[in-house]
Image 1: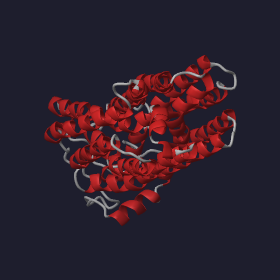
Image 2: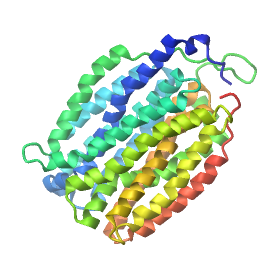
Image 3: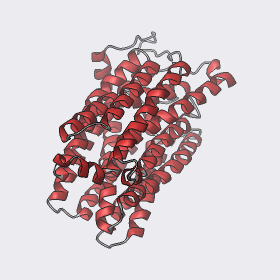
Image 4: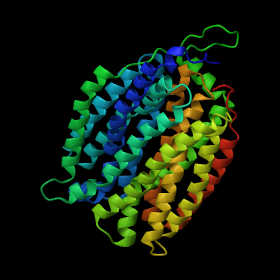
Length: 422
């Protein structure tokens, strides 16, 4: 179990530092998802320029490759952040992925693009586990879900800004390569002040079953402890299954809307990202506030708020899948907004729930394992969706399956039993 927060963690100076950390990481989260999302909004331009991409399945394979290497390296990045320094892990990740983003704007073939996106997946994998673990290190009590929610807002802003990349790609004087050059340089430059201002917090002390202070675990001990934790396994499954739908929505919705409603690449990119990410942005703050308040009455408060979000995602999947067949752009937008509301409630509480079931020294590693499983499955979903699209499988059938998966996920989260006092 973990020792109670010290008096210093409740002091005004410490809390100012805690919120400063969230503020410093907000732009990093934005860049993290902008750099990975904008290629979906510029798909037509990229495929038109790099013609040896050839097919939807090849495009899906490239997206899947990013996710698979991201998945493999997420536990490694999490363990490094737990074992050494969260600050250095974050700053190093930002610098390297930003350099690769810049290089992506200079590729000339599908093979070069494929390997650039693969290397970006490796470098970005180190960020999220370290960042969320650092935030929960600072926010030890009644502000945890809100702090994570504010950080996740950066992710949603990144996806929304990425949605406008289609307009930049369509601009004759700019083009898709400009976006990669600009965002890559922005990340490289921001890594310098971030390294100077960001600080690790002294680690919380954990006690083993005998009441003795426990050391930072080795790789083997960490993996065994996590994988024999029933609640952790349930959370991994709960974290993974809804992400199958989310990755398809994030990566393929611009192309889906453009084809189904015969709209421009720019409008499709904005419509596919702005509505649901804007809704998620607002609901992450609301969900974080509600979860923190609910925790005053019940240790399952964050679980209940996350479950409410999952209940909203289920009908949203049916709406997204059926809108093209009904030729209703309004239904597509409404379903995406509902999906965003549900996703915000879900997303802002995953790390806080993890913090209730594992000790502090394993949080980044645990989140890395969650990312590993989720992204591996997300890569299969991306590749599979491209293959099914080539073979004419109806969208309402695909998203109907996603809806049923979310119903099962709802059952899983309600089975989690957090530790008292966490």
